[in-house]
Every structure is written in structure tokens, then in C-alpha cells.
Length: 128
Image 1: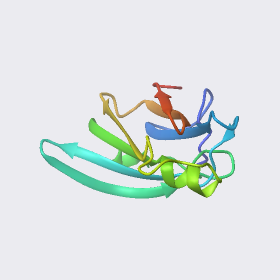
Image 2: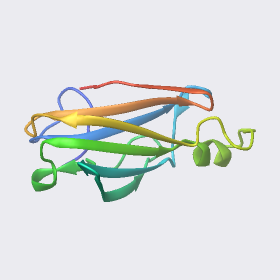
Image 3: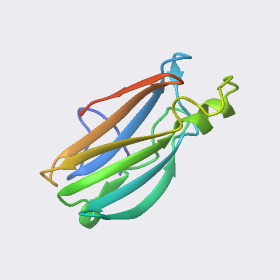
Image 4: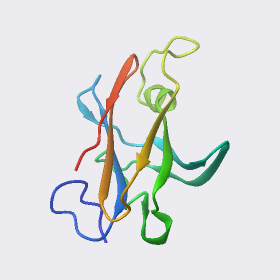
């Protein structure tokens, strides 16, 4: 299955993301993303991925038996990315690791969590 990250994506429920570098007006390639499932005080690391040249991951972050209702967190390593592309960041960087915590209520649906990022701000939403 490919990660189409938008309307028309096939398959059952899954979690995808897309990172856009709004400071430079391009997809954010090479962003390391950690995926966690939270259960009360427990924070279980599920996997680590990196965005491709299009700012997407090569496949869903979670799907199938790994994609169940609950609370999740994506941690985007933003400062590492901006340093890699040559941005002059202060020490410490204003935004270093950007955690996005969200709930999955229906595991049969496609949850798309995009991140629009610059060294000094970000936004996210539930996409399609």
C-alpha cells in the first residue's frame, strides 16, 4: 500500500503525516519523527521514521493491528532539520522537538496529521 496522504487514499484505517517547511516554502525532507502510544503515565515508543523528499513518509506511520483507538504522540525533530538545511538557530533553538498529541477514536478511519513548521512557529490539524 502506498501512502497517498489525501482523499482517495486506499485501505483501512491508518495514520499518516506530511511536513511542510513554511520558512523556505518547500516539503521538509529528512525530518525525524518518533511515534508513541500513551496509556496513562506510560509512553510506548512504536517507531521512528524520516520524511522523504516530498515531506511525507514512505508508508503509513501505523495501520492494521498497530492502529487502535487511544492517545498518540508524534515528536517532530524540527531543530535538527533546520540545522541540516542551514538555518541559523539560536542556542537553544526556540523550537527543538515539537510534540503533537492527539486521540484516535475510530481505528477504521484515515487520520492524517500534517505539520507546517518554521524555526519560530508551527501549526497542525486533522487532514484527510
